[in-house]
Length: 230
Image 1 (cartoon, rainbow, N blue to C red):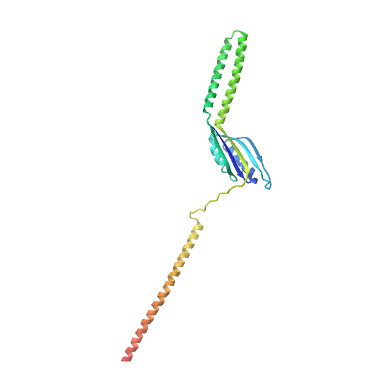
Image 2 (cartoon, helix red, strand yellow):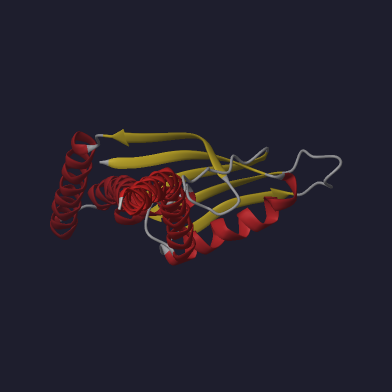
């Protein structure tokens, strides 16, 4: 399988160079190479800065590299395209061509050793030269295919544009501030309950005092009546 990808990032105009340097850093850390790059900066007022990179990344590191490039500090992903090409048939065909070319070269060398006339020798040498040229071409094509399988092509483009800052919801976990806030609420509620209880107790207390005063007055009047009767 031959894998490839295209990634377009958006970043503020004054961050083009910063993000470009981060791209270089990721490529180096993922053991990739930069085949071609162009970074164009522009003044904040003019805008229009951009950067383009043609990269070669080890296929085993491609997805990790894409994840890291998609999470750069000052950039957002505008678009991403992943490509996969099945080259199994081509791989087998190239191997067969190389094997046939080597077999032909071996056969021509044996014929050259047994050739008896100069004309035969010249003919065999001409065929051998053509066979060597074709074999070299097939081997180069096979090496190129192996490289494409082992190293994936990655195109990265950085355009000047706004960056959307994600809004993170506040944590609901226990913190000192939240604990103090909750404790304050508890104290307020407790004070309210105490005031309500006090408000209820005042009328009860007044009623009790009134009943005690009435009872005391009745006893005193009875005592006075008893003294008068005697």
